[in-house]
Amino acid sequence: MSKPVAVTDNNFDQMVLQAEAPVLVDFWAPWCRPCLMIAPVLDELAGEYDGRLSIVRMDVDQNPKTAAKYSVMSIPTLLIFKQGKPISHMVGFRPKAELKRNLDAALG
Amino acid sequence: MNKEHEVVIIGGGPAGLSAGIYTARARLSSLLVEKGIIGGLITIAEWVENYPGFPEGISGLDLTELMHQQATKFGLETLTAEVTGIEVDGKRKIVKTSEGDFVAKAVIAAGGSDRVQLNVPGEKEFIGRGVSYCATCDAAFFVDRAVALVGGGDAAITEALHLTKFASKVIVIHRRDELRATRIVQEKAFAEPKIEFLWNSIVEGVEGEGVVERLKLRNVVTKEESTLDVSGVFVSIGFKPNTGCLRDILPLDAAGYIVTNEKMETEVPGILAAGDIRRNSIRQVISAAGDGATAAIYAGKFIGE
View 1 (tube, rainbow over the protein chains, first blue to last red):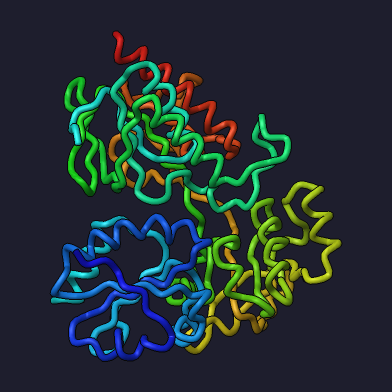
View 2: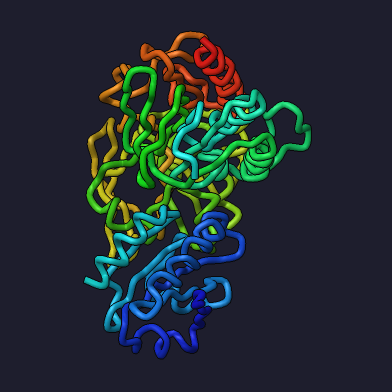
């Protein structure tokens, strides 16, 4: 059962930019209610897309550098990375169906 | 999940939640469909001090969380999905959603409203990168920076005050020469040294390299154009009703709001409306809750006939 792994400023390069498969990065913080609401949805998606793409989470309070590098100024921000580049940018709570559309588009 | 219910409630803000408390407690099988955050727009308000029963105030989040708990206790079911339309098939109402169709005898439309956007170049591109519609959500990303806030009503000025806890400077941009906000709120803003005012001004564009860096402004009186360097712009210029998907089935007024009688009934028997989605709503939690309870009671009467 794969759940979203936490990534940090230190291992972002290795875990996300150098990953072979697409990676969805969930920028969140504990004080952000919509972030907490989207978490279980992402947990489900991590399981459903296991093997095809991975979902990781980044606490922006603990890891301000990566958030700043990708101009994350609102959370939740969901970036999908492919071959080290962000190809999809979503801000705010999204229902599962919409997230799936974006994940499928990234895999296509 | 059961596909047939006696009542389907569209929208999980105070109107929908209150309706849910009443219908579920009346033993009507009830489903509430919400596409986003349970609690709706009020969840982004930092503090609600005028909802009756809370002399010390309460957060919008906590208040609506309590409402949801209460409704769930009586048996309300909740689904996260987006409603895409309603069809009327004799006595049945088919509520179409992103997670399938649901059949009901009565529907309560309580989808509320959403923020109006500026509709200027650059706005959409910079959402989440300096353009924000929620000061309480995003203020933390603008510590020690200069930000702009567009608007002049209570929501706008309250948000400007909130932003001063983080930003170094908050420039309020308003298209007239006086604010619409209630006096007590205006006074706080005028007394706050971090807040500046740009009167008679509108935003014509949002610009920057990757993030918001400046705004293009125009003075509506002198017609002069200018540029304002800011790290972010918070938009608080009003609301529009979430009635797009109901256009085909319900009569809406010119601004898109649903027209009802005092029983929250629309022209379609068995479809009622509650909360900010209604014409002439005063946009308060208490009135939304009142509408929700009223709609629930008359939905119950409709089903009983």
